[in-house]
Length: 124
Image (cartoon, rainbow, N blue to C red; front, top):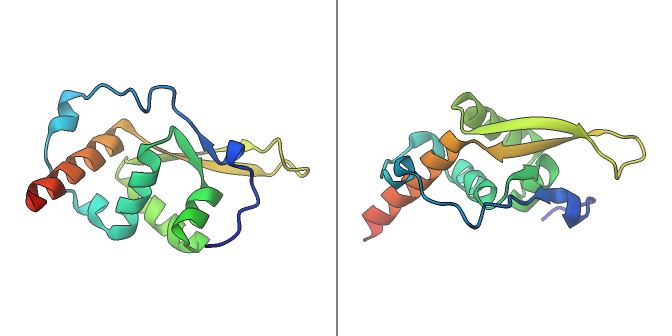
């Protein structure tokens, strides 16, 4: 894995309700999703599912991807409406470069949850 320069405090943003989500009716649907099914996109969604947002750098380093490869997969997920990206100035960096934050949308969470349920149904 590549070394990570950011502190863990700035690497992710916890969602106050992430662990205490109440299931929506759409989340209970079992649906195999071709977009989510690609192994790297499945891993990306899995990482994003547990937090409100994750920095691009941490996602890249955690998954051991090149920036170009991660960008390619994020574009597919963004085009599908499954993730959003926003950029904010970094307070930790002297040059105030912007940090890219990636987050799973409600539609992306539903697709991921439905896909995981479909995989579980195959396994059972």
